[in-house]
Structures are given as C-alpha cells and as structure tokens.
Amino acid sequence: MPTAIKPHRRRSQPVGMTYQFLPEVKKYTTKMAASGETMLKKPHVGKKRKPPTRYWEGTEENGKNDGKKQKEGDNNKQTPQQNKKRTKEGGKRGGAGEKILSGKSDPFPGSAPVPEEKLKKFKRGEKGELPPRPQYKLRDVVVRSEAASDLAQKQNARYDLMLPEDAGFLEGDEDEDTCTISQDDIADAVDITAGAKYFNLTLSQFGPYRLDYSKTGRHLLLGGRRGHVTCLDWQSKQLMCEMNVMETVNDVKWLHSEALFAVAQKKWLYIYDNKGIELHCIRKFNDVLRMQFLPYHFLLATASATGFLQYLDVSVGKEVVAICTKAGRLDVMAHNPHNAIIHLGHSNGTVTLWTPNQREPLVKMLCHQGGVRSVAVDKTGTYMVTSGMDKKLKVYDIRSYRPLQSYFLPAGASCLSLSQRGLLSAATGDIVQVYRDVWGTPVTKPYMAHRAKGSVWGVHFCPFEDVLGVGHGEGFTSMVVPGAGEPNFDGLDANPYRSAKQRQEWEVKALLEKIQPELIGLDPSQLSQVDHSTWEQRHEDRVQALGFDPLAKEKFTPRLKTKGRSSSGKVEKRKKQVAHEDQRDVIRQTVEDRMKIDKERKEKEKKEAAAAGQKSALDRFRK
Image (cartoon, rainbow, N blue to C red):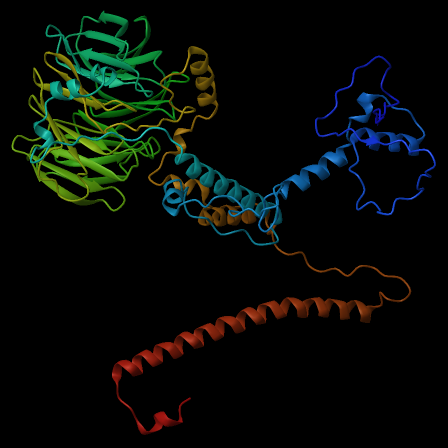
C-alpha cells in the first residue's frame, strides 16, 4: 500500500500546535519493494535542480551552524542590513531594461513625463547663478533649494492633472447672445444647489449696501449706508449677526478670518467679532472711506477723506505708518494680490501705487482725462482695469505701465471687480455687465448682463464660486456667473469646508509665517537676490572703521623648517615662488582682457569696412 510522507516538525515549535500547509505542497507516495527485488541505491535519473528552500529549513540550518536554539519570534526578525539590502533590490524593480516578477520588461520605464505647459504654470521664477566653488557651503544650500523647488514644481504639475473640478461656462443656442440670458433662466436650467446661489435680499430701508466676501468665499458681510451691518453664511443662509450702528457706514471688510471684521463708520474705525460685539474703536483712523486687507501681512490699509493712507497691523493692534498722499479725498482704492501694493485713484485722473516703506508713490500713472471712479487688479498682478469720468474703461499692463485696451461706455462704470478666472464686472447705474477676456482681443459685447432693483453701490466676485455679489439701493443680489470662480481650492490656504479647529490651527500657522511690511515692493522676486552695491558700500564702511581690509588675502609668511631648510636664501626663494603664483593670476587676467579688447576692436573694424564697402590695393595684404 502507498504511504504518505509525514511533514517535518520544526524543533522550535512547541508540541500541541497545529500546522497549516500551503496548498501547493504535494504529498509524495512510494511503493514498497516486491519480494525478491532489490532496491536501487541510486536512481538512474539525477535531480535537475535543488528543491526550493522553505523558511523553516533555512532557520534550522542557521540554528545548526550557530549552535543555538532560537525562538520563532527571533527567527522572523531581520537585521537592518537585510532590510536595507531588500529595499535597494526592490528599488531596482521596474527600471529601464529590468525584468519584473512576470518576466517581462517594463514598457514604460521611469516616471511619467510631465507636459511643459503644466510645468510653466507652476514655475517659480528663473534660476539664479550658483556661487563660486570656494563657497561650497552656500553652493550646496542653493543646489538643494533649487532641487526642492524643481521637485515641488513637478509634483504640482502632476497633481494638477488629477484635479476633480473644471471651470464652468455659458453657451447659448444658435444665433443667441449669452448676454440676453436672464438669471431666472439660468437658475431653472442648472441643478438645485447651483440654482440656490441666485437670490435677492430686499433691504430697502437702510441701503445702499457695500459688501465683502471672506477669503474662503463662504461668508458674506453687508454694510448699509444708513448703519445696517450684517454677516451671514450665504450658502446655508444662516445669519451670524445683525445690528445697526446708528451712524453712516462707508465700508466693511473681513479681516484674516470670518471671526473678525472692520467697519468704517462716520467718524472712526471699529472692529467687531462675528457675534456683533464691539472689540475695538481705533480713533487714530478717522474719516475712513475705503479699506483693503492684506492677508499675508495682516495689514488693514485705509484711505480717508483727509487724504491719509494708513496701515494697521491687526495681529498686534498697532498703526504701522500714516502717509499723507497730498491728493485730497481718497474714495477709490484697490490692492494688488501679487505684491500687496495699494492702488489709489484720484480726482485728477491719476492712479498712484503705494507701499508702507516710502512716503512718496512708487508709480504715478495718468489714466483718464477726468477723475478716476474705480480700479481693479487681477490676482496675478499683471493687469489693472480703471474707469473714469471720461466714460472710458481702460486696461493696463502693470509690468510696462502701458494701456492695452480702451473701451467707451455710454454712461461710464462706477464699480469694477475682477474674478479669479479673469472675468470683469462693470456696474453702470442699475445695470451690471460682465465681460470676458478684456485684455486680449477687443470685446464688442458683454458676456452677461443683469438689471438690479436699485442703483449699484458695490460689486464683488465670490472666491471659488461662480457667484457675483451686487449691493444696491434696494438690498443685495447674488448673481450666477458661470466660469467666474476657481474650481479647485488650496485646502492649506483657503478651505471653505474647514472646521473651527482647523481654522485655529491655520491662524496660528499664518501668524508664524506673517510677512513683514518692510518686504513689500513692486517686484517680490528681488527678495531672493543679493544687493551687491549695498554689500560693497557696507564693506567700504567696515574697512574705514577698522583701518584694514578683513577680507584681504594675508601676506605669505614661510613656515619655519629645521635641518637648515629655513636659511635666508631658501626663505626668500619660497616667498618669490608664492609671489610669482599671484602674479601669474594677475597677468593671465590682464592678457584675457587685452585679447577681448583686441577681438572687439577687430570686429568693429570689420563692420566699419563692410559698411564703407570701399576696397583698396592694400586689403589683399591683410589677414
């Protein structure tokens, strides 16, 4: 009868434990020798290969060689060298020309290529020159920093392909202009959630209203001219607070979060929380007409009727600077999100650019023949749109300070606002018009249009939403503008769905990363560059103070040697040798400069001869 071979029991396994066998392990059978037959000592066919070693067999051999008995838990442990070796071997898997477990080579070795357009989108500026090799520490830091920047650029470009949302758009039927489509038709055509974003608030008693959306785009702040102030979560229509300050309200503005907001009242500036409790009354800021908040600097910039531009640091509650613009009443104000520059419009048709570091304007532009009515700047800091009393709407390139487009509006535009996707809203009386791509090809007709119930007092696009808020004399209107908002938000910067705990953690981190007012300038990329002229001036001042140059090369002093090698002749010989080496560098540099000058002179002579076009008999002797 055939007999089954019993499995071998491990020595270190306790008695009484059950065993689980792998399904691929087969049971081998042998036949008993018949009577009168002798068994072969060696088979006539040898083994082709050694059978695979199981993990328990390898453990036993190691235990025999070491002469020690180890427990099962010790057998399963691996040394760090084995883990490191296994990690290195696993890292080679799937490389170019390498075969993987299935035996086939990877048809797409390495990482997937990233499109050049995506890389340009996340480019962080041009790379600077590396420091010289003697400064190896600084050179190493710069190289590692640029490598980290390149890695972040590639990762952002890769993740940009996986963003779930796309920008919206509006298309009409054949021979139908999108500007003729009403808000009611849009609300009926879209889903219930998007249709609920179009609504009207009838507040005819305390209007007209100015408005502001929070940085996350979830909360709305309204301020009526006759003292009515309210803030709410406009998506859920949940009221946060409502009050009447019993005096004129000129402007309202959210601060760094939805927990605090500022109100420019008739006489002074007030700070409230989202429950309507008055926290501060800042009497240094009087007669404020317009406000702008710089989120990364924690600065509240105010423009007053007395012609003063003031900055308030809301993190410590102190005034940073008060600048007298000497331009009269300041009721037109905007800020550049790219470099935190404040743009002010004046009654003489000029627009000035200001920072808290200087008492004079950085740039002064003549934009209109009449007074400036409104100014808006896009989020990239490239384009500026202005409207004036001359009924013109002009688009400027801030990089070159030149006009790109000029449009004539029959009644002019009183309020301007730019969305995250580049849409421009212009309010004329009770008509709100939205234009698309105003700095590209000339626009002949608006993208959308809407008639409000009263005269428009303020317009503002909601961040990360296709919504335009309009404050007018009869209350507030929320318009649906497809394609206005950025579809994908950065959860670490502005998260509309963050909890109270996340908001607190973000606030602490933002305070730690606050940018100082001294760093505000026209070109933010200059912060990573070295000011050589300033360094040279400081070096000269240091030399004059010390009486010697601390960075100068020390005079060579030969080292004292024994056995007659420090005699006067040998010491002088060593000094001359070192002096000759220094002279070689000077001579080499002089020769290179002379050759460069000669080359430039010859090229200049050739150009002059070619320009003259006259040949002489001696030209054939020239090389």
